[in-house]
Amino acid sequence: MRTTVVVTLFIVVIIALEVPPLLTRGACDAEFERARQGFHEARSALLTPGSAQAFLNAQRLSFVVLSHDRCEAGRPRDVDLCPDGPLIWGLVPVHNRICRFYRDDSIRFQLAFNERAQLVRIQTDMRPVQLLRIPYLGDVGFAR
Image (cartoon, rainbow, N blue to C red; front, side, top):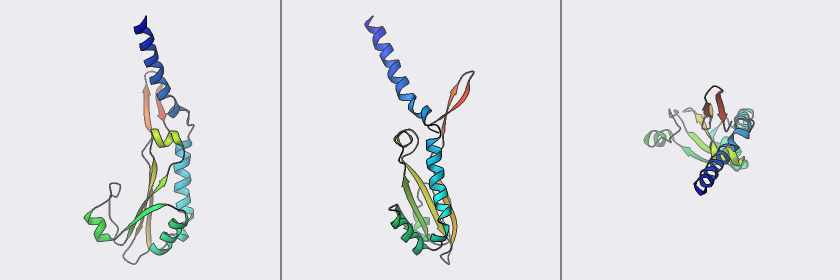
């Protein structure tokens, strides 16, 4: 009897931990899309490293400015290719608690500039959606 109660309680706890990410109804994707769209809409304020830093400071976002040499010497984990000029690399905090816990705690951004200090690339990244595979039902998006 006691074993049955313990096993049942264990199963209930596991299910309770797995349910919240299934109930986000796209909130994580929407938060990522808002951040991505915000950077693209503010492109005119991000055209040079100085104006980009002023914009990011006004938005109270944490960021680091890396020269080309420093980027090549110690590339951040999300940077595939260092630009010819400075790179501004930073984080946008994720506000949704479920998304922060089950998917990613921040949205990473990169503003890449060429050797003439002109913006050449805006990139935003967040950990991808995890799929929960259920036999006969297919894939269910986890913390979407």
